[in-house]
Image (cartoon, chains in turn orange, yellow):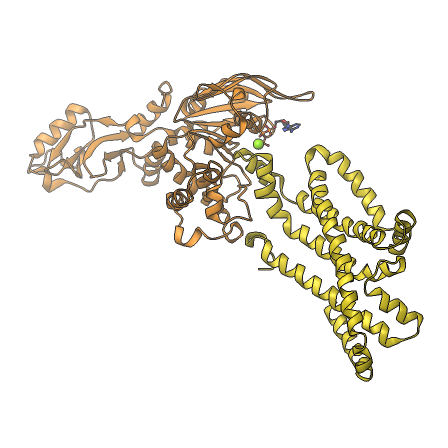
Length: 368
Length: 231
Ligand SMILES: Nc1ncnc2c1ncn2[C@@H]1O[C@H](COP(=O)(O)OP(=O)(O)OP(=O)(O)O)[C@@H](O)[C@H]1O
Ligand SMILES: [Mg+2]
């Protein structure tokens, strides 16, 4: 969708961007990451031609950006900046409708769109449409900045540290909201950040810059698992393995199709099953397969009766959709070595062990 | 300022008590001269706005940034020239009558308008302009929809100051035969006739208040609500 081909930008003697090659496939979020002054903003602004490249070519949707009228190009690209830049002289509604108005949409259509977009970013149109930017909190302004960029439904979004000016708690909330939106809208997003955690959370690909050069361009997991050099390794942080826990899902480390018993099964069956698998316990499921409890080998060896009489509550459960960070945190909080994994309905899907987690982290990085 | 005028008006009123009939004697003259007075103010003011606003806009374009500071320096220097000297210079070049008076008033009024237009436009944050450009506005649209609406309060404040100076200075136009209420004031001084003087001075003061009020109203209604400190 967006392709940079040997793109450079010189400001006098300073080389702000140095022969960057990069391709952002449609529907992906590409985060430009790096220390201050490394050329992230300059790279991004060359895509909508707020800055003209000194050398190289940029293709947007297959077309050479330099050959398209710059005003037309910009109207087809959503743009969000760190200072948000809502126009203080316009109401929220008029701010959102800036690009539709420039494109000459009928008023009724654009205003209806503004109301829809406010709903989309979780603000009540009845309250906010007629307000002015100065009557809004920072977080509300930022949401409207995003809504404004989406107004004319552009296929591409450029976002320069859009959530940088918000306090950490609200930032997480807005990031989550944006990711939910993105899952639905599937825009091609170029996102500037200098926060590795934000990048890992949002990106399908991360581009790490240093002094105007693109050092590594890869999936977040690959960047965390295999930084190409010491600079990248240091930039992503010494806790990069812990950061990967967020990227990996429970399913990545889970033993699927596990042994299980039912309440009416005789104890002998359970003991045999555990010995067969070399397990110290086995999960008991209900008639339709929901995880109900557990029987421990230690507690039932040599006993008689059925499983239902000897079951104990499950020590720990985790949803299969959770990330490994949640799972590991659950294990350490309760001092467990394993967790039962269930789906949204509570059906028993498998189990996850500490060893399984380390193996997942050690395994070759996975492509998303 | 208003208080001062009120005190002044009160004093004038007390003074005028005894003279009321004699003051009314000048009614015809006053009405005629007010017209001339307003014509001078309106003509020079309109000219100053017509020239000052575009000049200020041009000077605030990045391309002319280098010249802008120079021009502003010169303009600032211009404001230090005493009004009377300015009028005298205008007369020596343009002769006697309304044209030199209009010219002198025009120059006097131009300065605050240009200065405030430049200051107003420069105070619009760069990131707003960049956001506007990045969303696909043409330079003209950026000016029309973003820069001017956000600068108009400061620009109108300049117009307000300028017109206050203008209307208050119009009486001096009489000195070079420009007409206006100055005729009553200066003749009143010459003839040691306070009634005549007041017949010129009171309407002059009232006009200044009125014009200030009118532009204040314009500021209230013309400046977009989101950037209007008055509402
Ligand atoms: N208009 C300009 N004129 C001259 N130099 C510039 C200009 N814009 C940027 N630079 C320089 O180019 C380099 C890259 O700047 P850029 O804004 O792209 O950095 P960045 O990675 O976005 O940094 P930050 O995280 O601080 O925003 C910097 O050294 C900056 O000083
Ligand atoms: Mg930047």
